[in-house]
Image 1 (cartoon, rainbow, N blue to C red):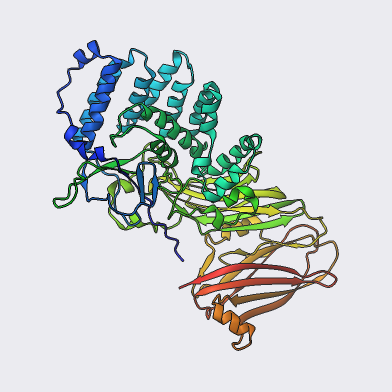
Image 2 (cartoon, rainbow, N blue to C red):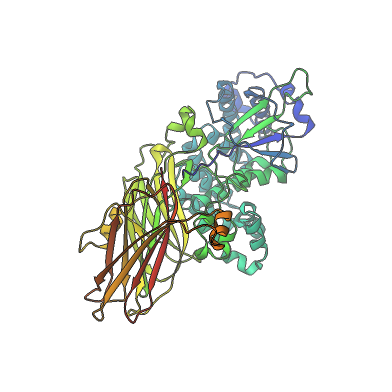
Length: 598
């Protein structure tokens, strides 16, 4: 089954009545004489120029059909949030008049910056960023820090610009310098992940004592990192960037034409700042709504954090728990390196080896099945700088379940699929199997909890069952099996079933092994299950294969495989079950779900 996520577009509709008059308030533009501006600009002039720009922005916004009287998915203060699934909006070119007006505003701000006002510095950074001039914004923040960092404001601005430039490790360092210089309460707010957590996550967070929260915040931010393939934690630096933008905007005019408040702050912290704007067109026979403003967030935005249930016990969380519900997102984020993120339908298999284990992972870049893939959006096909020309990459990672300690990794550059092995001590981990293609602006990821208990060397264990493309030759290694692992967890109709597994803890004495492989269709219908229980219906058809082998001659991992032709398997869900029996040993049993697709 293809997994399809409908795009998330957050529409912020201004509910305040005064919004209807925004267009009428616009002030005609007067050509700017740069020399005169620099000679006489004050901070007050900068405030006036910023206000005029935002008024003019609204005047030149593209008109959209009235959205004011539709249903709100969430009402937050004065704001109406709409999760417009199926909306074909995508960021497009900006009106040239807005771009020219912004350049004029930047001239005024540059002239006033000589006065050293932090408000002006913040406005320059954010408007340079709007214009795509993040390199200039970064240089500006760095220059400001040379004069002394004070309360860390210039370091926060530097962190914002580095995040936008994709330099996430440097961004985190800059933000941490800023946090050290902040007052304690402000730093606490900037580090608090609660705004991004779903209801279950917030209940878990509120149940923690203040002393425990500092430690658990590190856990949350460790798992907020979207892709470990990307150096740095852009989930964390994105959050800190949003707080920086809220402080920049708090004392400035905005396109909504309303006073900054906690509702606008929360929207920015949860979803980021807008990537586009529209203005409601007036309805000839309806109420006056021609000035209401619609703020658009990125249409590929996805929730930033997994379900709240994950944080209680990350190692026990299933793969599905790591895929948050994108239909009603509590937060959203679309990275510049891969705005389109899809859950990967790859394989992860555990191969226990006493007090250690080997994790095998295989994944290919998922097909783009999202809503916008069916439409012509030129900007969607071009990689964003600085990611343009960046090679594809795949990798497998093991993160300590407590969010602390060393993350183990294996990766391959220049590949859009991969089969990997990663050895680690037995224990509690979170596995992340990732593939990223910046040129395609797309990525795939599978995460799941991993719990492996240490076992005595002489205790027999049976690994997970790994789907491979064909039976392995004698003497093949687990690395060979990983290279032949299917980068998916399903078979096509008519495709041969080949599986590989590993026995460990045998070879200390001669013994024979009896195998039985069973493939059974899983019919989940309630009536059919009840009918079989009452013996009204017969059991579903079961395919079985049995054989015997001599056990391993020496201790250590023993890799085995089998290939079966099952052309009669109809599309549907099946359970594959392998039993290994030996005299004087308890049976070893391993199962895995399998889907057959047409």
